[in-house]
Length: 87
Image 1 (spheres, rainbow, N blue to C red):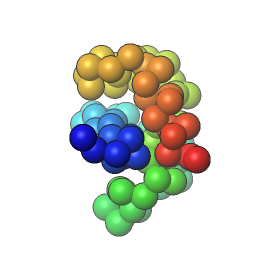
Image 2 (cartoon, helix red, strand yellow):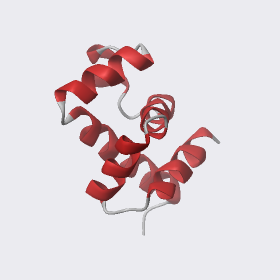
Image 3 (cartoon, helix red, strand yellow):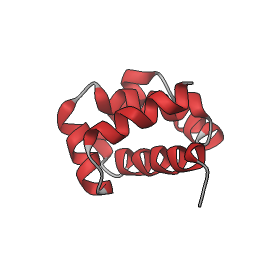
């Protein structure tokens, strides 16, 4: 069984992939967070970047719910994942 941190990172990476899967949402992520496409490529596995993605989803409930449904988890799991990655 993988360590909880690994599971958190994997889930957050899946959330990033989901977020980037729709061009309008991806553009909004870049605009709201100030990240660039290069940042995403270079730093995708960093906890700070993953937290920024999860924060982005939390800030717009329809995205949070949509992502959670796509990943087959409850929205609170994404929120808790961000908290774990922040600590």
